[in-house]
Amino acid sequence: MSEQSKFHLSLYVGDIPKSVEFYGKLLGIAPKKMFADYAKFEVEDPGLVLSLEKRKDGQTTLLNHIGIKLDTKNQLIDWTSKVAERGVEFQHLDSVACCYADQSKIYMNDPDGVLFEVYNVNRDLEPSSNAQPSVSENKEGSNARSYDHILPSEFPDHLDFADNSLEAVSLRGSLNAEISNEKIFSILQESKRVLKPGAEIVLHMLASDSEPAETIPTLPEPASYVRRIPSEKFIWESLREAGFVGLKAERFSANHVFEFKGSRFRELLLKASKLSAPRSQASYCIYLGPFPSVEIESGASFRRGKRIEINGETFGYLSSPTYKDMFVFLNDDGSACGN
Image 1: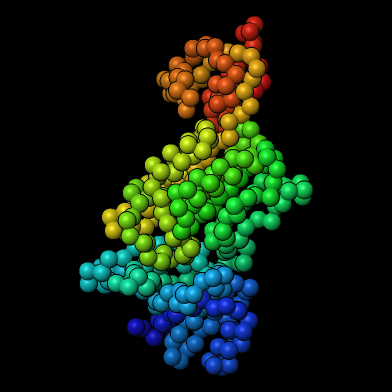
Image 2: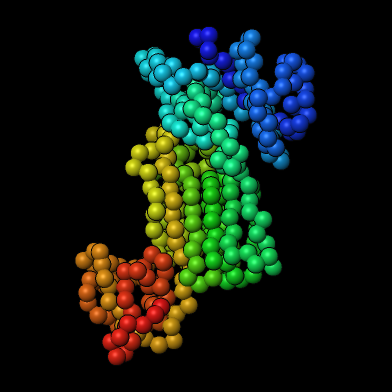
């Protein structure tokens, strides 16, 4: 290692203040960073970066990961070349938010699954810029309009909201927890229960082209809490089975961000809607495009520019955010009507 390089050790601890007090006395220095869920010491001799992360309830693992901190981006480029020449398989991340800093890194897992990373810090981040796991405190009766759940918080069996009461539900990493197919379907059903007709669910997660048969190793930040990566096909099918309509991928990374045992993992931002309340009477619509024709989940298909009579249930499908801007709805006299 060069003189600027430092060994990096990251530990899970039960109490940040108590651990900071202990290691502060042991190392004879104050922490360089300290927050409610994270602290970091930087020792010059011997060169050491010691980070402490708050351990989750029930977690018994003490070691988070190990690695080497480099001083410059050029050093990271040199390390990347040397590791590649030695035949070590690794992944690369550039400019990711981790440990209240913007970092670039390469990382790999040893035969026992221990995460090893080589990284440099591009710049420090303010606390608001570093995504931290939490769950929103929106509760029924507080005029809440949406619910936001974030991994690693456990998704509750029952959401404390009335039926048909929320404008949106956001699940950020929720389906990447170590949960069964049945639990995933339960999460989607409970989310649908609290949504208003026509309201949206948003899934932001990692999805795989084929789900690995083996337990995935620990991934680097910001994906360190990911324990399962369902297949893209399974997620789409589960949303349809749960009764959501108007499925639309807002983001699906062309390049995979992680790879394990031949499975490639991509970032997926997927939106869908709870079926809108159907109209009591039939009406007419015209599909505006952009495609020559389109088929929706109910099986109904529409040709661009052609006036078609639809029943109340089909109107409910077309009222979803995905479709509503593609159609104009007509009164019996041919004039446009609101939806």
